[in-house]
Image: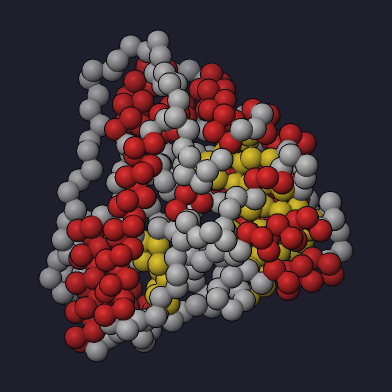
Length: 378
């Protein structure tokens, strides 16, 4: 499918459900400008967790309100509807879709399915949940530093996999979090095409919709012939559903069945499923998310260039940029101005990750950054 060829369907999201007239979901609260320097904001601007600043789409809000009429029922029928819609979107069979309580649960299933004797190989730094899940259950983790250009060092990762005894799980977050960079998909394809069946690839495409670089594409093409490839996607980013917790895996039927052994039967709640189904048919909202993100990136890039602060080329909804001085001090000063930015990502402790917010939020952030330069702090 085309990268941004979002599914256009006539799915009746709340078909047959009586409307709920008593409930009014609140609209997004107005963006609060930062307080004066030295005063901690009661309601800070959140540019720390790569969340979509738009909030739920109106279609998703309506689906949630309507769906409350069935909140007393188990979500089996809603699961079937969402799985069918995802199968249509990705042009696969329903049995190739695995739902999760967010994509992080799908990643947890992947780690558990790898087995206690597996070796998990990850980039460093990358999204922390896979190595964290592995370490908690006693699975060996090998971290391979990113290569030049902050891309996955696939050569070293492949060498590490070749030396491992027993099965191997390779986690590739592409685009990568926290760097926002992409590893060329042709390089990923070469490794997958030559790897033995004992090497399983979990390709995390949480930020897929944001990526526009021509050297990047989905690894989905492998799943029809390779049971050792699992694609992981989320509703959290492009559809602004981080708090609703809905994600999914796309895999060969045999791999999907293996993952399902480690899932809770009703792991996706009925209201999240209703919102997800509505979101899949709302291409206008997805396009708006991309447009707002582009505008925010442009404003941020202008400021960083003006201040001569190095930043990594991002294919996501966040940017890693260089700071001067101590990261904890920098984060504290941002909090004092009512702005939350990203947590530390060792070993990149001279960089800060900032998520892209609404235009007025990015204005507040860039104003704060410019004031830091005047104080000699960055």
